[in-house]
Image (cartoon, rainbow over all chains, first blue to last red; front, side):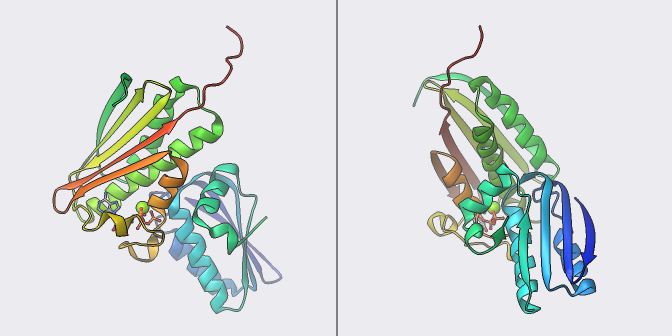
Length: 101
Length: 148
Ligand SMILES: Nc1ncnc2c1ncn2[C@@H]1O[C@H](COP(=O)(O)OP(=O)(O)OP(=O)(O)O)[C@@H](O)[C@H]1O
Ligand SMILES: [Mg+2]
């Protein structure tokens, strides 16, 4: 899946596009890792507005981002989460440990 | 077993590109039950979880066949069966626990938990070395028809 990147004042925003399933997530973890390494942000924002579908494959990606940000002493926020992915986050308990706006 | 009102069977190869195909097929078949967008989301997500498991876990280093059977049973019940002839699961009860995974960092161990949360019933039968069958059922609420 396609990822667009924006970095401003140590906030790294990754906007994900398309279907975040096992097929679409291939290479996404590495991409998230690389973007974090390059930007060393204090906040990571994952913008989900263009995610048309997400299953548990998305949970692993978010947990990876959260882990990396913790190592850097920073935070992770998910923004513009559509209804279907939101339900997956709720069912898996992610909503309790990650900020969802 | 409730009376069958309709069914389809689709067999496909365990290529990851078929995850999206399986979701589209399930949406298309479920349409006859006039589900809400929310119910449709639950169906697409559950099919995606079961089919991805077959692709990732049943056939970790080869391609194999996957059968998706979809049935409408009396009483507005949608039944989805995902079957593979792959590696199988040693301990199904353990596999169904939240966070249990043999899949490494790419997986979170939440697939079965999501299926259980989105469907009314999830039944798993597995024989190590022979394969796994996941049967999921959901009653689709009947709604007052508009028009006609
Ligand atoms: N069709 C299958 N064939 C063989 N093993 C399976 C199958 N489905 C599930 N499993 C086993 O059950 C475990 C739990 O499955 P579950 O879907 O809950 O989590 P996961 O696939 O590991 O991670 P996630 O679904 O969150 O990406 C898997 O890690 C795997 O060991
Ligand atoms: Mg899974």
